[in-house]
Image (cartoon, rainbow, N blue to C red; front, side, top):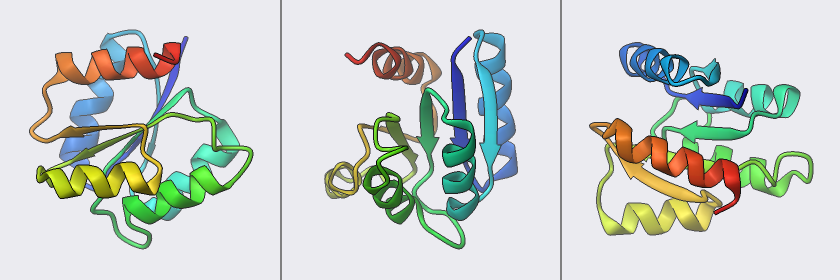
Length: 122
């Protein structure tokens, strides 16, 4: 069973994503801010991280930079999931180390495709 870490500060968004991922056969871990996301990623080593970018304590961009700079977590694919839909936001997320980018509101079918690609290295 693949494990997904959802780093999302909005409780309703986090709950919705978790329920849908669980129904699709994933094991799900959660974090409500960037600092907690980094800690959970380091201790649990999920298969994929879904990272909101606008987070308290440490924002998603910085959390991605830290995770990609750490040899133990650098191989974990990170998908940025954000309401920031400008092309510059995507460029900034990819520059911070995100492996993929998606926007809110969530198109769950598209997000699942990105998760599958990340899990298979494609």
